[in-house]
Length: 488
Image (tube, rainbow, N blue to C red; front, top):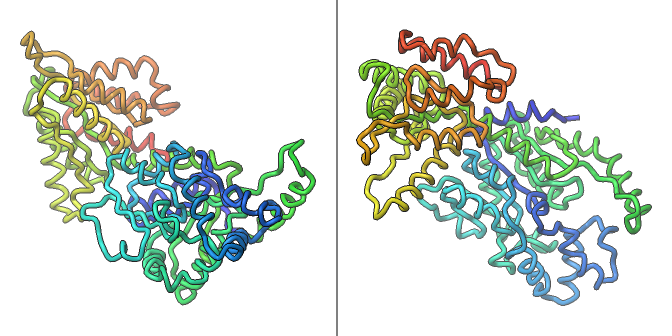
């Protein structure tokens, strides 16, 4: 049986994401969990009109075909799609975690627009392709390409739904097949939102067999989060019939898993779709830990000198890139410039590809109509900074209060601390640099187990508290904290 643990899946697929070799394939279960019906629900009324019991039907695609055959048109099926998928559900946390993953290729058999909404909320540009013509065009600077291989709710008459559609897929949507074949040859796919009885899973994997039969030896690993057959609740209508179906499906499960291994697919079994959220959350945290947000600002540099601060920030930026991490920065006054220069110079020395991925910069604008607009824009930028990272390093954090003329704690750095804490970041203040970084350390050291669990970091923070230590020693202590606390 090609079954793996959740921990192994997270570790292995995170590496594929970091290498820009990952793709997602999303099934109906992702939408069913937030209010949309599954295939049986979509066809329940239609089956009743056909004098069939939808719970006894195994060929649901054939059932949709029967409805078409009866009327010689698909108007009722189209209406069902519109009713069910236009406005019934809201975004789930799972959709939000998907949108946070730095995966630029997403396939789906779903008709709804929940993924589009999730990417919009994450401030990402999505290139949606649900018709053949869409594949011939490209949205410039898109963060993700969403390929809706079975169509979209906005054009239900073109949705892949009945047996005729599946049988004529190559003639009508052959370009999707060619694109999928190309992606499958080198990307590691994660299939999620599929149940054991989802009719699409048979279709998809039979298509995989055809697409990959000449490349059986050298296939990248693939993963499928698959829901186990579920036993009917006690007292439910037709319990004995549903129980018998459950027992049949349970017997088939190990054979289905073994069969998927022919396509190099390893299965992660879950009992409920709700478990996907936690898996995606953990995956996001592991992946985002490769991106480090440097939060800080400095109007003055005490208790150290400006030269030492500049040298430290430059070395830190250099080592972030040299050690395989990405730098995320909002251009904090007196801090970010040196850090960015160090990171950029190291990336150029390495001839690092996709420089924009290694250095993710979000400068804070300076011109605003009023203070309310400034606060809103700055808040949105800080939320984006935190979403793109999983580790936050706090340096200094002071600013000039223009009203009083005094140097005060930087409220922006404290806001980034609150956001990073709420998003489960690894938090690393450098208290020797004073300001907000020292305030943050005071909160952390009062109960370090809340932030670092059982990991003993006393030696590292003894260095980070000591103003006499060198810039290199501070940098080494920071990466020692990361190394000790990372779980992958």
